[in-house]
Length: 134
Image (cartoon, rainbow, N blue to C red; front, side, top):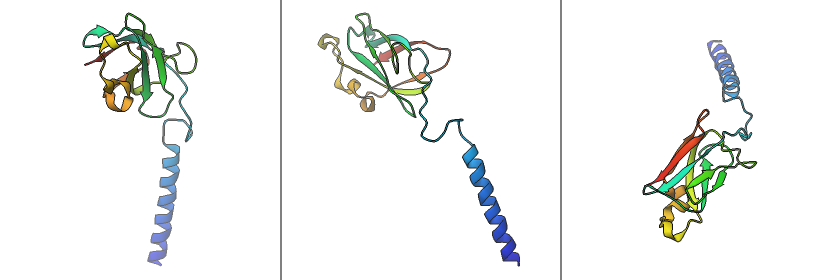
């Protein structure tokens, strides 16, 4: 009898735990992609000098779509995810810069988010970002 009660208690505890775990989370459904964006613009520099051309990419470290922006002659960029200038999803992003001018002298490692080792945190309430490539 004691074993029977113990099994029922264990089963009830397991069911309750599963229910709590399924209710926990950030309010989104499994597989749902975060589409809310925050406007992001700024300047990208290499060794303290603005890049003069290229494209900057912000890739979310968690769920979300990449954001891209053209780099102007003064190093300025504005990110786009879904529609022009809408920005990037909130959170931590790995950054890459590609298609730069040869005169900028940017090393190849910055062309890929996996090798650049540059991370930017996009947060609500902040729209201006300085991206310094060492």
